[in-house]
Amino acid sequence: MTDPLTRFLAGLEDQVLATFVNARPLVQQLIDFDDAFVMRATRMFEASKLNEAGTALLAVRALSLQRAAARLVMSGQVYESKVVLRALLESAVYAWALSTDAHTRDVWEHRDDSDATKQAARDLFTWNKLKSRLRNAAPAISREVADLYDRLIDFGAHPNFGGIVDASWIERTLDGQLRIMTAFMTGNPDLLERGLRELIRVTRCSFEVLILAFPEKAAALDLIDPVRAILQREVAMDMNDLEAKSDSPQQGVAPARILPMSHDITPKRARKETIGNLVGMANSYRVGTGAHTVVINEINRREDWRKRWRILFFTILTALVGLAFFLMRG
Image (cartoon, rainbow, N blue to C red; front, side, top):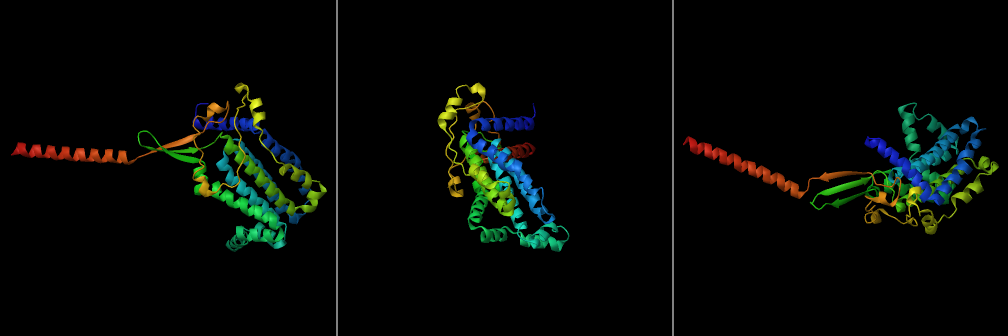
């Protein structure tokens, strides 16, 4: 593997394995959810009526997005996972909305028939209107959806400041240049745990919304209480367990400190809580934890002055040559 893209993709695969080992309690929670719901949820749709087709399609797509988000987070692409997590929430809410009445289903299904139907769909499926409808049906779930959605928008689902600085940082080099560094992937244990816990929280919220769309079928299959028990399980990362497994770095396990996740990170705090120094993190793990960065050296003031001095030098030199030529002719 000689080209950068292939090496980068291989690094992502390595990071998945490193996350699986180092954050196993949280990863196990995702595995248990997948076994208990994702692999069984399709049975809810086996006997779906025609008017439930749209809801079923969106629900299955939500499950696919949940797995995609898990893949991104476990590979260290925590920032990039925000967009997929936002789509997961939206798909779950859309699925529920279609289950509520025939008019909503018709508008969604015929969106692309004409310019008029497309505009009608845009008007009906604004996020604020969907939140309002969900709030009337399930206030507690609606509040959780709104809170998670706003956090995702702030920290990566949209290119807002909080998300950008949480995946990038700027430093001044010894020669006075500015170095802009952006992590394409991270092995930082704190960021990985934060991403995994956020994924579980969004998964839990999306599950509750999907259950609103198929309450009777989910109950008949005994999906509700067992899955809730999995997603509401309190998982504490035991530092002693990690250290006990980390005696031999050849096994791909690092004595990394996994810190408790804070849910009160705000865009204002994000200005201070940037990634920090990810360069050299590869020494902490055997596999998949080095930060892939793009470094941009910007022209600073000193370089600007160098340009100005060069221009001034050549201007004076040209003037002196012209003066010498004039005197020689005289």
